[in-house]
Image 1: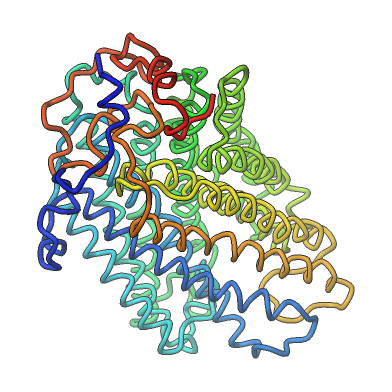
Image 2 (image 1 turned 180 degrees about the vertical axis):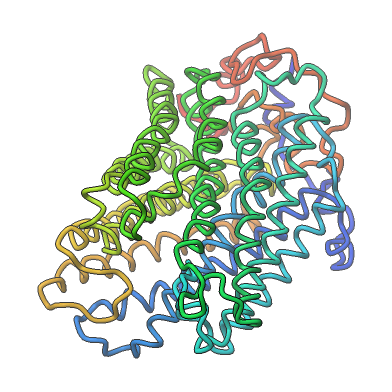
Length: 559
């Protein structure tokens, strides 16, 4: 039986951890410790996020007025392209797997590290190489094709840095493939005794499904970019119709990867939400098996719906009907998750701490994103809505309202475990509310703009659209403040934050049964799992209710 002393013990300087075991730059750059690699990913991904955010600020400032009076139209094309490239390929895709997945997956299954630690470090170096090459190309002149690199824009010689950016993305793809391979091997071979498949945390199930998509889908986009480079260099007709190519072939290849890539972004976020909702409701997750298998179902069906991006591209009406039907089907596993999360909260003892506020915000925002996706999956409606701001709003409700909000929930939830320090709950809640309000004020008006016919990717627009664009830009300002606050209070937390106990939220998962921050090898002794997933009570060796009563107000969990 774990005692209250073990539960509420604070992290002290005398405890060796992955942070204190060798602190030179060389020891970090050559480390094979998955936790240190996750921290380096955290720093790197954050840099790309804030660079992408700067481009987003310029987009919103330009659209504050109807005329193209801040940026030239050619510059505006480069700005929205570079915003998309940085946010999608270097933030959204790697954020949760590379940071939270890297740090937590071995801890959650009772392993000392990932199965292939050198490969893990190599994936980080590959990410850096791809990112640096892409940033170099963007700073030298950038590209103006949009982040999708649609032909014939990307096959003309006017966009001189398409090749360099494409090479950066091509290289970065190997980082995703290696990470996915590492996760699958680790989950299959390194689970602690007693950690059966149906005792795995749903966070692990989500990363398992994501890894399958990474391995199977990423080579397709890599080959597509390679074919694009071959055509530009040799002028062999592959995609460019001027030399005998087929531009629709590019769209088929690109979206065959890029729609599953949506699930690379959102599935790990769903895993985070499963953890947060169950644990802050103090209740076993409702329908564990359904949520686990729905993750696999999303990964499988995600490869079958790419054609709904091409309803106006000239594909046959029969193909359109099939893809429309499959788009409705792929919504079912996501709906199962939302229902089960809601059922888990029903009659739960909910603690409205910062991670839970983000998780509740996720439910609302992702629900809007998912339902508007059904509009775009309908062949008739898509003819009107394609390439309007309705698509922009839908995409951001799914990606930012889904993945980014889940990422923030996960960072706040596991921050005490990662650093051994608590952050300010007051400022965390303020940040969560600002992000929620600012996000809706930014993107909900864009649904109306899109329905009214405002096209995306234009620097100028008719005056009747200005009021809603002013609302959107004002919301982006609020959202920016909300996203900046965590940088401030997390930094303060590292410097002067209250020391967290080994299990500050008092939860049953394996990651909470080691020190905060964890030692280099994660566990002093190999743990043996004898309890079911999300089991609150004495049967798992952690009498949470007694601990809560004994601890008083010092533990950051509310009844």
